[in-house]
Image 1: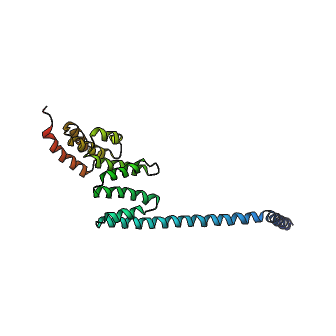
Image 2: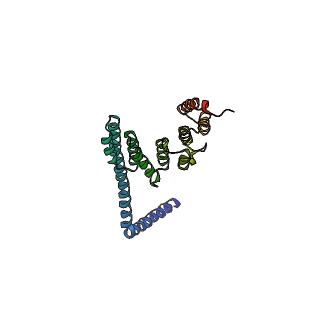
Image 3: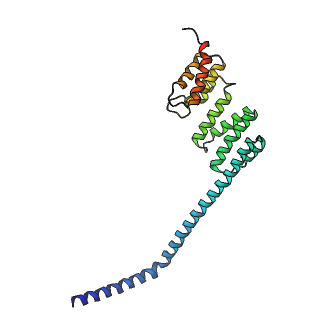
Length: 220
C-alpha cells in the first residue's frame, strides 16, 4: 500500500510540475527563446569578427612581406609605396619602421629620423617598438649629434636593466669617438665589453673600438 501511495504521490508531483512548467513557459517562454537567439547571434558575431580580423591580418601580412621583397630586390620606391598601403594595427606599425629604414638606406637620413621620431611620439604605437624607433634614430644621428645631444635623447636607456642599454651605449661611444672624447668612448665600450648580457657581435664591435681608442687615451 505504501508503494502505491508513493507512486500516486509521484504522479501527482509530476503533474503539478508539468502544470507549473507550462505556466512558466506560457509566461516566459518567448524570453527564453529570445535569449537563445541572442546567444547564438552573439557567438556567430564573434566568429565573424575573428574571421574578419584574421583575414585583415593575412592581407596586411601579404602586402607587408611583398614590400620587403621589393626592398630586397633594389626597388626602394616601390617598397615605400607598398608599405604605405599596409592598413593593420600590428603590421602597420612594422611598416612605418621599415619605411624609415628604407629612407635611411636611400640616404634620406633627416627624413628617416623624422619618421622614427614621429613613430616614437605616437602613444598608439607599441612601447617596445617606439623604443626601437628611438634607438634606430640614435644610430642615424651618431655622425651629426654630440654625445650630450644623444644623451638627452637616449639617456634613459643607459641602465643595466633596460632592454636597449648596450645599443644606447654603443651610440654614445661612437659619438664620443667621433669628437675625439676618447675617455668617454672608452668608458662606454668597456661597459659593453664587460656586460654578460651583451651579444657576441656587440662585444666584438666593442673590442674593435677599444683597440682604436686605447692608443689615444691620456697616459696614466
